[in-house]
Image (tube, rainbow, N blue to C red):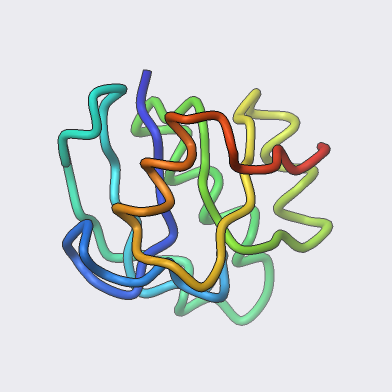
Amino acid sequence: MKIALSSEGQTLESPVAERFARCPFFLIVDEEGSLLEAMPNQATQAAHGAGGMAVQLLATKGVTDLIAPRLGPNAVAALKAAGIRAFEASGMTCEEALKRYNEGSLMEIPL
């Protein structure tokens, strides 16, 4: 299982980004919470369709779950098509969001 977090920075101490599709970075972690990759979000440059592009990028990395603040309708549709579950987190660090995810206390975003 791989979990992606929308992040303002390249470490787990970074805040969860307030925008999914245009966040600066995606952090990809394994089920134990080990950071596997911090990758720049290439969808930030898109004029349109950033949500779908961001989801496609995560799907190519084998992501199964996403932690993000909120999602637009295009991102929701793309996540549903890719079979990626989404969980809501805002106003905390990626590390705290991951801890809450593992505790089962993040609300799942209906897709």
